[in-house]
Amino acid sequence: MPDPLTTTAFDPALWTTREIAHQPEVWRELAASLHRDRERIAGFLAPLTAREDLRVVLTGAGTSAFAGQIVAPALARALHRRVDAVATTDLVSNPRDHFADDVPTLLVSFARSGDSPESLAAVRLADELLSEPHHLVLTCNPDGALYRRATGLALLMPEDAHDRGFAMTSSATSMMLAALVVLGGLDDVARLAEAADTALPALARLDLDADRVVYLGSGALAGAARESSLKLIELTAGRVVSYFDTPLGFRHGPKSVLTDSTVVVVYLSNDPYTRRYDLDIVHELRRALPEGRVVSVGCLGDDETWSFPTLGGLSDSAAAPVLLLVAQHLALARSLALGLDPDNPFPANEVNRVVKGVTIHGLDQ
Image (cartoon, rainbow, N blue to C red; front, side):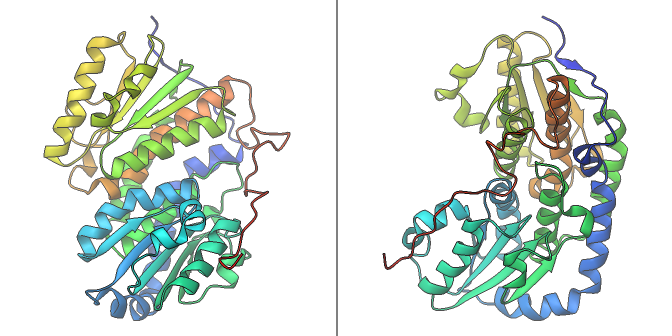
């Protein structure tokens, strides 16, 4: 069985190629923008986060939902408040379940375009069902309906974070970092940008030879695994099958997906306790699969295929935007190797960049 790690020449003319590569610079620009706006941000958020009865709900659709799943653990620890990541696609279909507790709620909306029907409906439903809703919008599009209609606080990502390619890359990582900075107190964006700058030249030569890929991660990195799986499915137009799970959950049936040609990517936690479980599945799968089919990604340097050693002291939520560079490059490389256009993998519009065809029903219908 050949080593699955190969090389693919990336086309620098592609938006997706450029948007993956410019993330470190976009992150630096974002940090500077948030610093300049710190008084307005604190003026809105500080009175809310001081309230012991505040609930925080992180929401979005697709990648934007997974961004919330990734940052939620770090925000819960930083705020010492209830923080729930709930996709807009769940909020809109079952609003009374997710807004069952009528408590002061900060709804944090992640949105690249701000025009998805579910994003707008989630805001409206919070206003209808909650006595005291508050809104924080993190978006990349100044012309999007979510930004234009925002009440509360709306923060716009740098212009280059508004991806023109089909899949969310720099938009997603920028919104994650914005949430971690303004709600989680992250003050080390420069460290993340430096780690990404260091890794990008090698990652730009990364590819894999596989027709199915499994991504595994624990805690915040479970969200990263889910986002990684989606990125591969999107950019290969479903021609590479991908699955996600947690290292412990994978053994309970989903392990059936494995074949000798499967590649498994395991994100290793920075938490020493959690990492033991991550490494257990790495070692188990390396005994079961042909050599080279298990790729580990982490920050502590032990038994890692891809390591980002300068990020070892960070929470998994904070390290995730850099770790996701691996998945972004693998998805881009597979797309190109299959002869697809990563900027437009669905030329017949079977899947749209901004979702279409959703009917939003009123609560009184």
